[in-house]
Length: 450
Ligand code: SAH
Ligand code: SF4
Ligand code: F3S
Image (cartoon, rainbow, N blue to C red; front, side, top):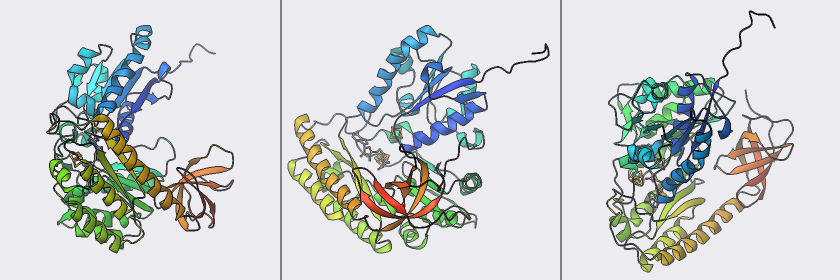
């Protein structure tokens, strides 16, 4: 080595753990990119990190409490390496703010979902170490352009944030703030950038994604269906998905997009929470079970093969056995491809917080019964795929050599045996077998990547 050699300082390492929904997954990517501009590279190994960032979820008590058990486990690491920075981002950060630092002094930074563009300045000590306001400025205007860190053919794109629906059980309107739609031109630019980097599938994200609206490229007010049509015109974008939707925002235009836009995948997550009108009313969902069922009829008329999924809460305050039976009946009537179901968790600050709770054991039993029904429906839906040929976008290597994993049009995980195909190939695959949470298929077409 000559005297003139200089060694570049080793990059600082950032470890991020993401809890909660896909919007947090997207935010974690954007925070990683923002910190990338500060010289931080991502690490999968917490023990070698210079900064640990926990991107948190507040939706149920269990999700929120997980933060504190993880912080407890970080104490020895921080004691051994006092220069380690520990940051808390996301919805618990928004909801609890400085309370987090009071309870857990190991925490250096607290940053909410609408202020994380300031994370680099916070890390440099040039901004307050607790930032949880809802600023006037749009964080997306202050974040670095998106960069592909590795070849990933499917990406998330947040188009809408916040929620004005105020369901009686839900913290999101408080943690994410009021509904805001990102402008058309920004969304189109980000989508074009992603496609230019090899992305073939985009999932549009928002807490109320189908409530998105904006001024279109033609000077007219666009709804979400119109945005999807515009994205359908992008060369190289093969698949479009979106989540999560509210039944009351399923406009005709969006339903028609499911009929007309071939890139829009035949899959819809449409949470209903309960099948009882009494409970729906108490939840402030602003629609009845019957209205939901008729909406499903219209969606299926537009796209008969669409796979439907949903969210359910059991044991909401006031729920009787009859209400529970009504929910089971709605599930029987719709036939879901899969669904998430949760035991009600009272959240501080929400309207339902103080309402008398359903007996815990009763709620547990109802949850089990409901999940058993949903599992049967999931199995039936998967088995009905056997023999069919579907599109599969390969996303990663499987555990066995010569095996790859992708997502079908219907969002099932599909294993295929192949030594030739590559990540990013969109193949026609015939489904040959259904396992518990995945399908197995064989390739019937060579990659069409032109
Ligand atoms: N914006 C989406 C859902 C966001 S939260 C929508 O409106 O559908 C995701 C799911 O968590 C909800 O659909 C609901 O089923 C569940 N959830 C929200 N708050 C909850 C609570 N307090 N207890 C139990 N489950 C809850
Ligand atoms: Fe929460 Fe309801 Fe808004 Fe969904 S629509 S985020 S459940 S308040
Ligand atoms: Fe959780 Fe916040 Fe998403 S509370 S579900 S991370 S919007």
